[in-house]
Amino acid sequence: MTRVAGLGLVLLAVVTAIAGPWLIAVDPSALDLSMRLEPPTAGHPLGFDELGRDVLARLVMGARISLFVGLTVVGVSATVGTTIGAVAGYAGGVVDEVTGRVMDILLAFPGILLAIAIVAVLGPSLTNVVLALVIIGWVTYARLVRGLVLKVKELEYVQAARAIGAPGRRVLIRHVVPAVLSSVTVQATLGMAGAIIAEASLSFLGLGVQPPTPSWGTMLDAGRSHLFEAPHLTIFPGLAIALLVLGFTFAGDALRDRLDPRLSGWSG
Amino acid sequence: MLSYVARRVLLTVPVLLGVATLVFGLIHAVPGDPAQAMLGESASSGDLAELRSRLGLDQPLGVQYRDFLVGLVRGDLGTSFRYGTPVSAEIGQRLARTAQLAIAAMAVAVLMAVPLGVLGALFRGRAIDQAAMTVSLVGICMPNFWLGPLLAIVFAVELGWLPVSGTGSIWHLVLPAVTLGAALAAILARMTRASLIDELRELYVVAARARGLSVGRTVVRHALRNSLIPVVTILGLQLGAVLTGTIITETIFSWPGVGRLLIQAISFRDYPLVQGCILFISVTYVGMNLIVDLAYAWLDPRIRYQ
Image 1 (cartoon, chains in turn cyan, red):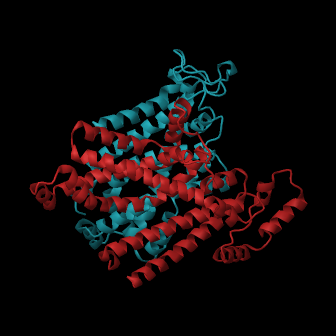
Image 2 (spheres, rainbow over the protein chains, first blue to last red; image 1 turned 45 degrees about the vertical axis):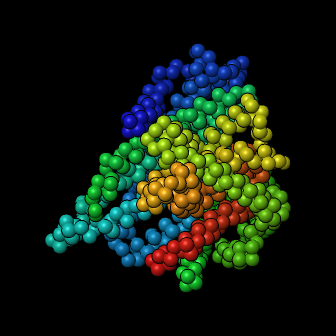
Image 3 (cartoon, rainbow over the protein chains, first blue to last red; image 1 turned 90 degrees about the vertical axis):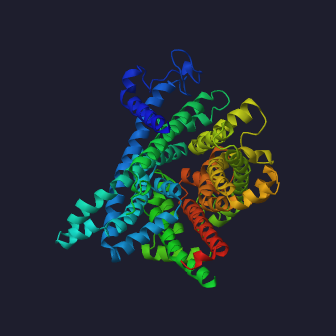
């Protein structure tokens, strides 16, 4: 049940992000000050914002931003983290020690605080948000992969590959890394929810996507000044974030049940 | 135990040094000239030179780093560019408010979570259980920057029961504390439920019931107390999340704590204050994790020998 709901919500967001602008023939940037803060109507089911822009059209564009940030952050973090974690776990020794200490320091920071610090220094923008979230994001994957590689490299088939003289790089890429990719996929799906929340948090604080680009976090921030006269500006963007996060969480849980070797009796 | 404490404290030193170095490096990674960024494009060269000198930016990087570390050891976090006062004083003024909010949020979380978890465990698989777990799932998925404004719409705007922001009375604390504590409550409720279900299967619970104790008395006097041990563990692990959660919650409700100070400092490009707030929150986070670890080692001797 939750699996279907999760996949359904994620699919809905993806379809909305891709096809939405063609389905909704309203310009998300078009201003109409006469409709400022107007509540939902039949023609504009989510109402208008503080500048008279259509909230539904902006939510649809915001879905693109959220999914873009999620996919980019997760894609880059997972690639970087998997590479570093795999090399550290397989090589051991000094390489493992050094990456271990760097990871300890990054993990000693509360994640969102480090992202805030990075964006505060580099300046608020979509690119800097992605950069900040990658800098804090890769550690999770590196730690996960390092731990798994330490187990996998002791398995017989890996030792056999080494015994017949396969070079270390080939063993790592062809035999070790494929064995950990299912866990990375599960973590990446759950990581989408985290990245979307983090982007929305930073944008809500004024440190992320800058107006007039429609981001769900920025829309929530703008709605905060109009709680009394236009609660719809707060309700709809928040609902969109919560549903998408719920979707990725359910989808991640479902994937974990199917793919995670630790849950299917694989001892490693 | 003493050697464990010493080892654990010693392990914290390189982490703290790394955190301090990272924050120092970040602030010095400001693109272009930090003095220019603070004063703006129209600043005169004289003003820029004076600010650079005041911030020590005219010194070699190595000297700046040494002065920074020496200052930290003395508790000197520099001077706020905007307020002209020591950063430590600015943080000190707001510290009590952040602590008040964090403690209230944890109290709210426990008060919401335990009854929900107990109901879920006692009525496992029934409508009450499903309702309790749905409420907790909603709590987990609702970001606090949405929950806060929603609570404000319902309880401040529509019902007029509570103030929408600011400080002054205990009522001002309610919405921020619930906003900050909700996600924690959701996690704790699930933990309480799972832990109590396990505990209710234990023989001593069956024995208590066989001796004629009522369900309520058995749960409250016996099973619940034991089932709360993992709940307390989770509470300790979530302290950091509560601490960083104050940044958004304080911003939503204009609560004058350290988190809001940080966001204001960022908007004014007051880099010494930004640096001080980030360091303060990070060091508090590391310190709290240390205390939680030491508390576990004290409670569970097996940890000391790992």
